[in-house]
Length: 219
Figure (cartoon, one colour):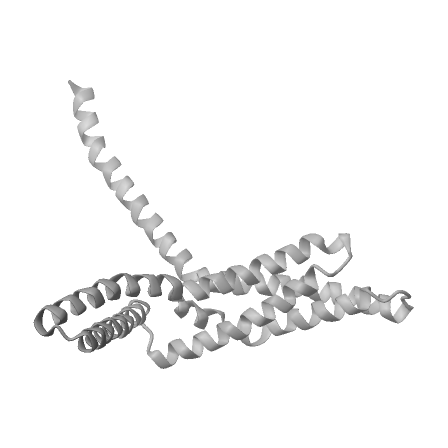
């Protein structure tokens, strides 16, 4: 995700000197106060807008996305943020020491996927099952679990539902781990390729050294 605060700072850093410079030149040429202010503000505003369009285009080009794709991804990431906030609230409202590790893992994985997709938007496509199915399921289940476990008196039926919900959450945690793996799968493949290349280079170097060492042994 393009950092809006950083983008604003960069654009302002460029636009303010342009505004001052435009105003100074206009004043020296016309000595007209209203015209100076008008052109200075127009120059700064135009610089701000043009630079914003340029930065946005560069960002999209870098990540291989169209504006339509980026808007689509941003909308889904914004929806996911709301769901993750609900998830966070539910997970830490649950008063059950036995499931602490599981809850931490669920939140860690979901936030990791969201953070990676926000930083590199194209990764969103590798995590579509997470965004369109698995995240909804884990939010609904944790909210249901939170509701059931908060009941002052628990019937056999409630206790059975709690057991089933915990089991399903265990399975969903493994599904989320697989979602995370899919998001980083290209990086893993690239790393494995680099390792293979490095091993091949090392082996070639060893092969080249062997004849030279044999020559010295003969002497």
